[in-house]
Image 1: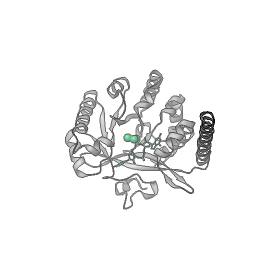
Image 2: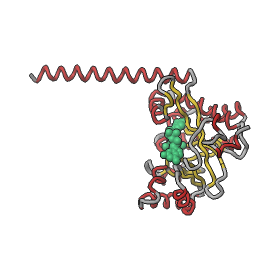
Image 3: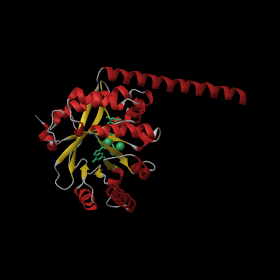
Image 4: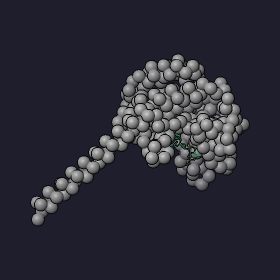
Length: 279
Ligand code: C2E
Ligand code: MG
Ligand code: MG
Ligand code: MG
C-alpha cells in the first residue's frame, strides 16, 4: 500500500543520503591527510611569445599523487577542497612551492598561480602572498595570479582592494577562462587586469566554428581597447597557432609547446622548452 511504500522510499532515501554523507566525509578526511602528508605536486606548462616562440613564463598546475589511485587531476579534487575550505592551506602550500621553484629560474621567466575564489574570500590573500614572497625571495614582478570571474562575483569592493594592493606590490593579475563566465565585459572595466586568458574551448573550435571566431575577435578588440594583453590556452596545432597570431594574440600556451610537467622533467624530451630553467 501507499503508506508503507512511502516509508520504504523514505528509508531508502535516508540510507542513500547517509552513504553520500559518509563518502563525502571520507573524501574530506583523505584530502586533509593528503595535505598533511604533502601528496601534491606542481607541474608547470610553458607560456610563449606567440611570434618568437620564446618562453615568457610557466603556469603552475597542481596534481594529487594519491598513494593508491595514482595521479589525480585538479578538476577531481579542487571542488572538494573548495567546499571544505581545505583549498586555503592547500593554496598556501601551492603558492609557497611555486614561488620557491620560480626563485631558481632565470629572471625573465614568470610563474602564474591559479587562485580559488575561496582564497579571495578568506580576506588575507595579500598577507599570505607578501609573506610568501619574503620567504622565497621571489620578485613580485615575476608572480602572476590567475583568477576566474566567479571568484569576483561577491564582495567586489573587497576584492578590488586586494587586487589593487597586489598590483601595487608588483604582481600581475590574469582573468582565466575568459569567455566562459558571465558579464565578462563588465569585469574588465571594474578590475585592473593585466591579462586575459582565452579559454581553450574557443581554441578547439577556432578553425571551424564561426561562434568561436567571433568570441576571439571581440575579446581581442576589447582587450586591446583596454590595454590588456591576451594569452590563448589550448594550442595544439600549428594551424590554431597561425590563426591566433594573425588575430593579434600576444602569448600562447598548449600541448604544441609542452604539457604540464614536474620540475624533475624540465629539459627532458617531453619538455624541451623548459631547458633554460634547469640550473
Ligand atoms: P586552467 O587554469 O584553465 O588550466 C588550463 C588547463 O588546460 C590545465 O588543466 C592544462 O593542463 C590544460 N591544458 C593546457 N594546454 C592544453 C592543450 O593544449 N589541450 C588541452 N586539451 N588541455 C590543455 P589541468 O591541469 O587539469 O587543470 C584544470 C583546472 O584546475 C585549471 O584550469 C584550474 O582552474 C584548476 N587548477 C589547476 N591547478 C590549480 C591550483 O593550483 N589552484 C587552483 N585553485 N586551481 C587549480
Ligand atoms: Mg589557469
Ligand atoms: Mg584557463
Ligand atoms: Mg580552466
